[in-house]
Each structure stands twice: as structure tokens, then as C-alpha cells.
Length: 386
Image (cartoon, rainbow, N blue to C red; front, side, top):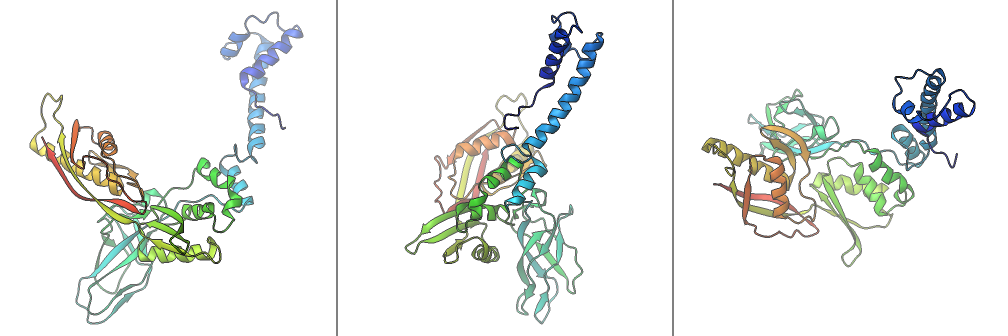
């Protein structure tokens, strides 16, 4: 089987026709090509039989190919690839859960501390649900508390933008309102075969504690993470510094404990932190009337302007793409250490805002360098429509 090569229908059919010719079952080979190309109109009995048998052999070859490739990392797919990964102790990374901070506010004055156990279900108006990972604790002198929540369902479809978690599904002993002031983080789909194949090919390195591949595989399975960056041998003491996006205290503590117990070397020092926000201001002049027979009305321009501002925030911060009022797909935004380049933003806007004809950036005129430990964050965005 080392030299096995799957044969096509045409190859099988041609071999059978040659054999029939040698045995005198057909008179000549001049019409072989037409026999192959026209399988539905065959009057010769032997040629018809050869065509039927060739199809059967083709099916058998496909089955043999599947068996032949099932234990080969470079070719295996689906369940076969999963079986190879399991044998090496590297299961396929499943869809991860999105996470977000949600603020709960008491509607009534309560003259005592309030504690609500974790597990409270909140939802968006369209039914995306999250559950609290921490107890909601509000001292008597306070009226609100912010806690970490995780999506009930994994995958990109559970990601949400800001101000969407507004419904409290669980029955609570007090009246609360809830809101998420920022977009969720994390929430990825299951790894594809090609993405998974990369890990299986490096399985022995993944099992080596402290290796780059070990950290990479951990973060592939980590909930609530938008991105990360490893900086080995950092500082005078040789720490491994890890920048985690978004990197709130709850997330950093959880990841730190996981890494120390299962990924890092026993005596390896780790330093985890959130990326440093690098605020990006935008001042641009936009023209949407070029080549327009009928210029847009002021109201239409205002709508386009708002969509441009929303798209700029999505390009920098990430979020769902708003195309003409319909949300489609999720864009991850700028990565840790990725420089802001106005040209890339212009290309992004040209694709997402079809009405946009021209854009000129008054600020920034050139790219904005982002340090390796920083991440771009949208700030003041001013769009002038002409």
C-alpha cells in the first residue's frame, strides 16, 4: 500500500476498454474518448458493462483511499483526524465560550449586604444567554456590582457587542437591572481540520511543559480570550511575560493558575497582564457623492456617517459588521502589537460601506506605531461629510 494511488473513473474505464479490445470484444479503439465522455449513450453491450464496472471500481477506490489516508496526519479528515489526535493525547480544540463583565444594579434601597450566588442567567433581547461565574456581592453602602459572565453556548454566535445583556432570566429576591458596558471577548468556533492538523504534527512539543506549543495549545482551548502574546526571558529575572486580551483580574487569575498547574515548567516564573491601551483618534473627510447623479440627502449622509463611525470602531476594537443596518459576521479588530495603518482602515471601509467613494485622513496622516505590549483602542472619531 506504500505506492497506492487512487485511480479515476476515466483511468479505470480506459483500462477496461483496452482489455476488451485485446480480447476482441469490441472492434476498434477509435471511440474510446467518446465512450468516456458520453456515459449515458452507450449502445455496445461490452462498453456499457465496462462503464458500469468502472463506476463500481471507482466507488471501491474511494473507500480504499479513505482507509489508506485515515491514519496519515497529512491526509486524514474529520473523525479519522480526531482519532489520530486522541491517540497522541491532543483532542481537537472545541468551540470556546465568550465572556463579558456585566454590571448588576439594585433598583431598591437595601440596608444590608446583598449576595446572589453565581449561576444567574442573563440574556439579550434576541435570546443569547450568559451566566454569572462569580457571586454578585453588593455591600450595604453600594448599589451595584460588576461580575464576570460566560456564554451558555460556545462559538462565535454567542459573541455580543456592548449594551446587549439587559434581561435577567433567573428569579432573584431583589429587583435588579443589568448591562454589559463592553463587548464580549473570546467565543471561537471548533478548529478546522487544517488548524487541528498543526497541533497533531507538534504533539510531542505540546506535551513538553514550558514549550511555546504547550502555551499555544492551552490558549486554543481557553474561554474568553481575544488574543495573547508570549514574551520569553522578560526582565532581569527571566520571567515569561504573557499579555492577555482583554486581561481583567478574574481572567488573569484563572489563566495563571491553569498555566502553573498544567502548562509551565515547575519552577517557571510567569507574569500575566492586560495589553496597554493605545488610544486612536480619527479625523477624516468623506465624500459619498462622487459619480452620483442624485446626491444623497442630509439625512442619508448622516446615516452613512454613523455607519462609518461604527465600522471604524469595529476595525479597531472588533465587533459585528454592520452592513446597511444588517449585522453580518464578526471582525476581531486589531491584534496585540499591531500598528494602526490608515490605508488598511480605508480598504476595510471601502468593503463594508458601499456608498463610500473617497476618504481623506487629516489625522492620523501616517501610521500609528503600537508597542509589542499594546493594543489599539478607538477614542475620538470625527467624520466630516462633504
